[in-house]
Amino acid sequence: PRQDEYRILHEADLRDYLAGLPEVAARLGGAPASWSVGEVGDGNLNLVFIVKGTAAGVAVKQALPYVRLVGESWPLPLSRSHYEYLALTHQARLAPGLVPDVLHHNEALALVVMELLEPHIIMRKGLVAGTTYPRFVDDITTFLARTLFLSSDLAVSAAEKKEGIAAFAGNHALCKITEDLIFTDPYRVAEQNRWTQPWLDATAAAFREDLDLHVAVSRLKLKFLNAPEALIHGDLHTGSIMVTEGETKVIDPEFAFYGPMGFDIGAVIANLLMAYLASAGHERSPGERRAFETWVLETVENVWSDFAREFLDLWRTQAEGDAYPRTLFEGDAGAARLEAERQAYMARLFEDTVGFSAAKIIRRILGLAHNIDFESIEDPKRRVVCEARSLRLARAMMVEAASFPTISTVTKAAREAR
Ligand code: ADP
Ligand code: MG
Ligand code: MG
Ligand code: MG
Image (cartoon, rainbow, N blue to C red; front, side):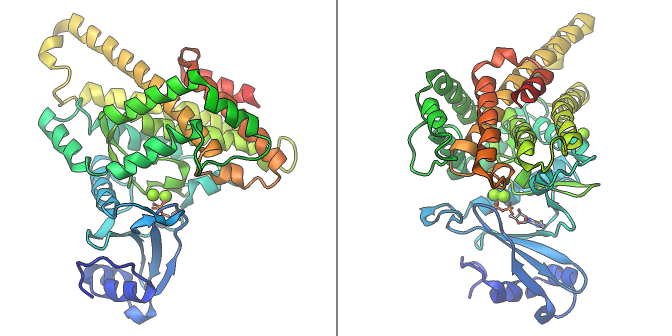
């Protein structure tokens, strides 16, 4: 078969393909016949193989022409692999050390070969097990502040920004998934929706009738559609973060495009809030997971506050973009006004973050794709208690933005939801 023709690679083809890439083959080490190849993909969309040689391993991700979770009836463009490659290489420049190294990309095969993350695990699994991650706040806030600030109009010229938007504009099929599954379907009758029945039937019905919520989520959807603020990851949940005690790596940026910054920050915070509210469902004795739960809420607070500090630091020191021209803010009075404007900007970004965070929670409980934070609570009566608390919190965060001016009001509400 030709190298530039798409085909789904099975284990033997993959071995031959990698054997033909001198750098990858050298990294793996040993004879190709001795390499182990196994498919490990647990995501919703793609195939992921882990290949191990005598010297090292690699991870190989290949896009399928359809959604893995649903099957061939739901086609999805292979080009998402190209956007994932573009995003990974861009993020590696903006936030070094926080994404896996890319070793090879074949656009026609929709395939990316990358550094094998080992012994990293998917953070969501660690959170379900009650594990705390001491480096997480530092790393994820650096990832967020650097990738978002350094791709925004605060940091780059208008020309560079527009080239960036253009480079990712073709990724609209992936954006459409978000537009439908996050911002629309959970609020209407949609075939793919599901929830813990029968206990959440009434809540799901109420969400389908709740016009305050419909207005709030539609405003968020509009922001997602028309605010190319920065190159966002687009799917930054705890299943897209791999961790060890000492390292954090962000994977799976196939949803990347120029969108609103709050969508990424909100994704991180939403997933921590769900880890917190699901925790009661995982305890075997009352209070068993208290230290973990305390850490999770501290982490929510620190994610926002460290992110804001790092973002503002970058703004004060690396504002090379066309926004806020320096000559308009000269002297002490100018500097003071600009600093006040930075604080106002952060307040608006925080409001977006709270709203997007709420949207991310609701879709995991009433929409198509659920998460193991809740799903692994086997007793549905225990699970639904956690889910109902999360929905109540998320609804308040979405429609009562004014009640959540600071991150501590969010963690306080989460604590009171229990
Ligand atoms: P999808 O887009 O289908 O969600 P992901 O990129 O999230 O695919 O990868 C699916 C799974 O494959 C991850 O949950 C993780 O277990 C594994 N994986 C992905 N990339 C790597 C990597 N570089 N090293 C080790 N495991 C990986
Ligand atoms: Mg994934
Ligand atoms: Mg940091
Ligand atoms: Mg993915």
